[in-house]
Length: 132
Image (tube, rainbow, N blue to C red; front, side, top):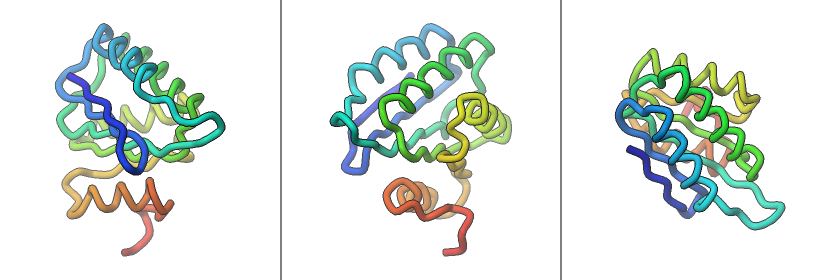
C-alpha cells in the first residue's frame, strides 16, 4: 500500500508492506499526478518506510524511477524513516544509485522524536547527525 500527501513542508510518501513491481509502478503514477511544485521551486520529501519491507529486485528498479522522478521534479532534501536494518541498507543503496544520497538522511524509527528529527532536516536543513 502507498499514500502520497502534500504537506505544509512539502510531500510525504508512506509505503507499507512488501511492495511488488506493479504497486511501485502505481506509486510512480500517483507521484506524477500529485507532486507538482511550482516551476523552478524545490521541495522536501519525507518517505515513511516504517511499515515497509525490502523491495524485490524488479520493484527496486521501479523505485529508482520514482526517486529520479522526484529529483527531476525538484526534490531538495529527503528524509527516509526506517524500521529495519535490511530496509535501511536497501534505501541507502538506492540513494547512491540514484545520486540523491547527498540530500537524503536515513532516520531510525526507534530513535526518540524521529519525526521532529526528520522535519528539522527537511525544513531547516538541520542534519540529524548533529547533536540536539
